[in-house]
Length: 184
Image (cartoon, rainbow, N blue to C red; front, side):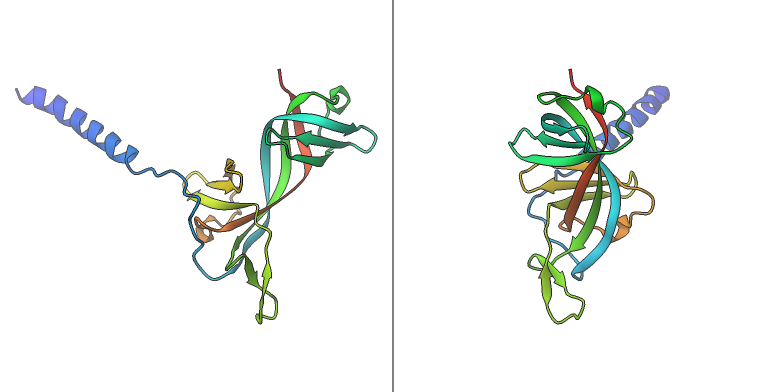
């Protein structure tokens, strides 16, 4: 009888723990508001943004400029970095997975702006997305763009995650493709 209890107790504890952990996760909330004093938290953070299943609509091989169309109809032109070795194989109409080298700046804003250098007024900040979640243990930041697209970014060791929180604004500058893969 005692050995049966010994087996059931760890099993019961394991099931209880797994139910408790799954109940702690909450989905991103688009209505989170920033906390803290308005200003730049960190700028120029290098990230790689993967754009899956985008279509090439224009290509200039000499200048190494490519224009991609997203599923939502938006388009953007990029420079093909020298690390893109298969540029000669690309053609207009191809569907590709593009790896875009980008720089991210994170701000705490107040009414869409941050204090100017003099501190007397505010200047507007272009916000591309809002932070939804920060997971320092795995160094992940979940951001949501205005159109509802959610992106998880793996942060480097030099990124100040402890200063970031849900509701902070993200500005994303992406101009260069570091790798491109033809989709089947």
